[in-house]
Length: 280
Image (tube, rainbow, N blue to C red):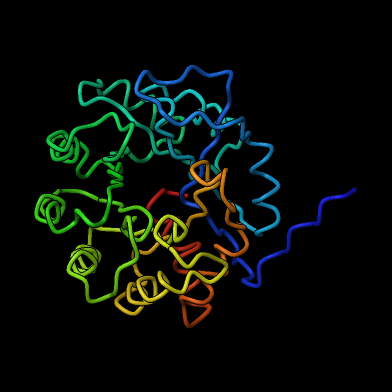
């Protein structure tokens, strides 16, 4: 019995389209002592099939919490891809300039602050690292439960340099566009140093895919405000949803189609903005 082939997305990706947040997992690499998520292997070859189906050219490999400060898994994958790959790594604040330079040469452009379960970094370290990286071409990438954004908005708003916020805020529950936690995200997204990823709708939604109607108003509100610093990502391979109905990556790309009004919007989000941010 043959599996039903997965569909192609309705959105036709422009040249240079980039998935700005995806992971690889390989049991050949050691996991962190703080790790709690141990998915089966999801290798670069597996992702390449998704990339081809979606019509994407570029990728940004993001360090999973499973590997802590050991970025070898994603950097080896970035090495294999070459100039169409970039990486977001997790590093301690004690890292040397020489080590940062070595990571840069392997495609790293961001330092990840995963401020949720299994994360390696503390909030007080975020402004320290942001100050150190300001003006260098590096950025800090922050993931938190967006319900906490009103608490952390002042800290994030003061950060020097470029900041990337994950997954439409990654709220732990659906909220309305007029909720104060989302107003915090809109205010941050209005700053000229802050990017936001239109991704991870399935983390927030209770109604589910393919359209995620309880999250769509948030994405549309971000798009209406400005597309200048919005990004798109699949968050493949969705390891927190392996025991549920995993999202179809074509649905996640078409979520962007439904959230935007023009090909120019989609080209900005999929190609132009990531090219500027990651230096493609």
